[in-house]
Amino acid sequence: MRGKRPRIGADDNDVDEDEHGIISRPATSPPDALSNREKLSKVCDILGIEDRRFLVLPNDGFTAESMDAEARARQRGTKIVRVLTAAICDTVSPSNAKFKAEMMEEPKNYNGDFTRMLANAGKLIFFGMRSVRVIVKSLLATSFRRLALKDILKIESEKYNEDDHVSSMVQKKAVIGSEQYSSLRKVFGVLQNGHDIPKHTYTHRVDATKLGTAVLFIQQSLCLKAGAVRDVSIAGHTFRDMPVYERGGKSIESLLEAYRVAFAEDERVGAHTFAEITRLLTKRGESKCGLST
Image (cartoon, rainbow, N blue to C red):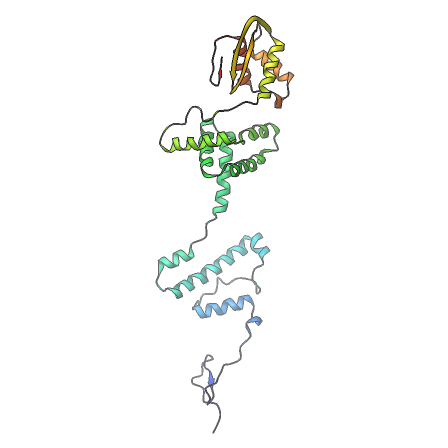
């Protein structure tokens, strides 16, 4: 008599087979009809995970918003993934502790670490001692191209824009010129060979226009010493046949205060440069580092 062959056993996983060998399985719910939690529960069945207490999640799973905003949702989601991953590792390569440990290792947030490292480097450059600044700058100059380093320091310096005084100081220290960049790379080579930081890491040229304001101020403020002229080199700029002036009873400090009143900050040289210019133009035969007669 034609018909179905008898079922073997009474388990729900048994199948029916007719005389043509065609297998029919018991009706089951289509995958799309299952909730996310039910799907994961079936995965646990397959992997042999009996303890389901970790399987705590909404039927449709956690939303992206809840995973970002709720610490508990992220913790529960992470635990589900880790338990299932561990079971899969045991299935793929049983008793392989090394493989399992490698697969279970949490990814490291190198991007976050890198961002914090650049922020800390910026703080040392902007607020650290000169020797610290040189070391950090030389390390960055060896690690990044100049334009990339310029952008990095610009971004870090903008974090201090709220305080005008601090911002002005930071902006100056964030500048990396091509000559300084090249010199800093050489400094790194010196440091990695175990030597101390060179006394002068790069040649700094003061803006000629700013030097001109200092010279002009001295010319207008002091009395000329008759018959005395000389060539003066100041921070890489040479002024020829410069007359010599007499300070009289005026101190360099008082001249500096008057100079600061006469010219805006972006038009004048710094206090150290002004003092050296004053000495060179008012005293014969004196030489300083970066300035000579």
